[in-house]
Length: 447
Image (cartoon, rainbow, N blue to C red):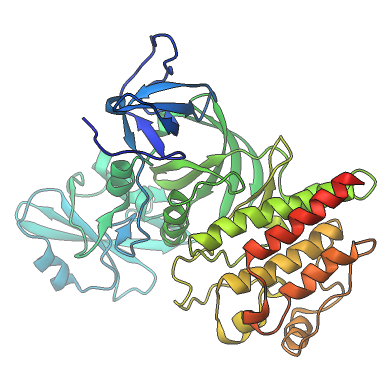
């Protein structure tokens, strides 16, 4: 029996079906995600909410297991069998004891850009050159693959052009299988239960689709490239740690030749598009302040968790069908803000110290939040209009900031300017900003 006490907001995954509930009990099926509301007076019994149906009822702790947060561990790998740039003799040494179908993949030393599949067969190791041509991979120039994961999956099911079917991967020392870790923590979803519908967006790293998972409308981010998919594991790890009404909720991950990140579906799209397509004739000032408040609430929560977003902008805020703003896109989020990263920076939203010295912190997020406020009150106009990125960078470093958007309340523009202090230490914390916007919201509602 599970003896650990769970607090409100804890996410659990059902270990079995409970389709004939008694009075006041919650109905659920194996694999359903439930959120704890509170413990009851009976030991091991909780009141919980079903994440899909939104129904509430009693559950037994024996019937569920807690979804665990995944550590952003660099050893976590989508391709534990990939050993990077090692020689043929090194690969032969690693493939011990010799079992038919034991394999690894390495970078080709002789043919730059190509790979080598090394497979044990009849007490020997066979090396197959994997040709990279026109963004596709092949061994025999007849069967082509999108990426290495796709290729390995294929040869684990078919012998094809190689000596034997791939059976057992030889993991690189120090790596952990992302699939096993995600499954163990309760975040690996079943591809058979996912229906992918129409495409609703195109990001820098892949397409975003609307879909259905076990009856729930979801958004699906599809990342195809091996290297890019590997980098998105960090985003996934961050999202397993957070649970807040103003942050887009992760439902889980699917690994099936490609990486699918499944989140709640936000029916009204991005904040920037929401503002641009409606404008001031449709959206009242009160609603603009409400959006500002909701984003600030989400960011205050990240601040409390010592998480730095690093790409806060109106394009990365999503709006639900209930017109609630939620912070999204943790592609650049870092649990360790001191670690340097050469990711492509969104210059117009990036704080001076981050542009100049690559220093990211909650206070650099506050700077970005000031730019986001400007976007909100200008109804989605691009910041620093008619200025090149070079001009923005040069001027911002000398203390320049934008003029107030048209018809923006003076108090909100004052908040923007406080976010744009050159000295990060002088910028307010999200907690303080939230208090000020809350006052503004109250006074606007009273009008």
